[in-house]
Image (cartoon, rainbow over all chains, first blue to last red):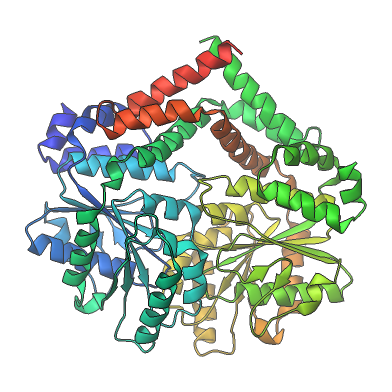
Length: 307
Length: 307
């Protein structure tokens, strides 16, 4: 019932389902199981970069552009610093009071505190939900330096990495691994001093990088706050997608996702009480944590045996 | 044997063990099991903040100060943008060529790519190793925006959060949760314009924050590159520690750590081949991922039954 309403585009059913996914309620899994056959149509773009790079402004500009093309867009924000709230984008320059009223836009921020790892699985579920609900493009916005966030961005069909001139340690960050995940580079705030230099440095780094798919990530200059470069950015992302196999449908990506889902499911089977008792013993130095972990695992598999 | 050498302060045994911990080799667990009774003496300080806040410069200044007090110091850097290499701190202004030769300083950078979640567990292990090796103070440096990094910083006895004037979205970041984990705030680069304003904003935010332990985090101004404010910073951290129960010995922290260790251990038990087959089926839309996960779980418990 609910599944049919979501596929049919009922916004209230979608909002309720999104809340269930976010809170990891059991009914979310049942629902997603029914919805899965309806997924696989959306284009998923990952957007990542340091805080202050202008991700939310860029997302707002992308929403406008995508809507202007007549396509619908869902946004999943996994960035705790992103100024979204209840389906609207907040912030002085980018307030979009219309997005509440526009059924072609759906925005959800994911909580990131106190999860310790379930975030990638929850984000995957949210993307599947929006995909089943028929959104043409899904933007997944993450902060680009945390490990989980990079993993989440990697689950998109194309990953856009935002850099800004003068952020201090650009080159360090580039060297530290962002090079490996970017399908398109965005130099945002391209009207600032240092933009040309950053583009040069990026080009130089790209010369040294070796990608197994031989794709050379284009570098697109944007001024997101003025909407400049956004069409070019979408064109660059589409150029990548046109020649790449869809990551969201690849065996390798599903292998990562299933491992994440399994881990979450297994962890849920370990009773809190047992972990608490073990934690007490370790805190008092009565037991080492490695032995405690082994014993908890043994208990888990024993209880599985008796089910 | 190795455990005794590490407790005895053999630098080569420690370096080899650190590499084993970093690479998650099985012998690391055996070793840490033996070393655990020797842990619990070190003071663990977590240092977190956005890229560009000057964390590595501050760490270098802290090392100097701690060494000047006659204490030894271990550093675990979980920040991919941190310029450490092979036990030395790199960078123009902060090159410390002596740190290689000083047995009172041990620095390790943790890799952060391709782990999908094991980082917190690996960091915990590295801290336990340095603790057992007798380092008086252990600094754990992380980037403060990713979920894993915040969790890692939370595992320290005291968490120091670095902010810098003019970083654009300070207040956003503060509101987004850094307020909840900071035991001491550092306003670094305090000679820059905007430092006084940032301190004022922080004070205002602190008025609104409610901590269950009623601690009001002090705000310490530093110019790490000139060594200014470092003594005051350490004094502030010690003032917090003097009135706080040691987090690294608390049941709550060990509960989090054990869950993290369990997560990692569980992943090791998931058979790659079965996951690959399931991933293929899901990628081809022959099966939904939720049913696939359930079936993999059932297989896992079946194989446990036949062990």
